[in-house]
Length: 80
Image (tube, rainbow, N blue to C red; front, side):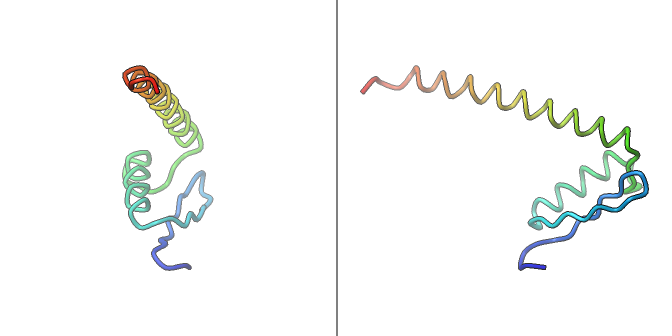
């Protein structure tokens, strides 16, 4: 394993998936897994899909808000 990478095991429907990521993101991911799995570190497929859709929707909303913010900033900048 490369320097500064951490392995996170995600167990979905009794199958382990290994993700290698930065230690900082691994800590975040492990916290999220704990929330989704109610602390068991085992996620049922339905819960996994529900979490995926929820995260996708959150990203969609963030991207939409970011685009609005960029547009507002560009409109405030003086024209060149």
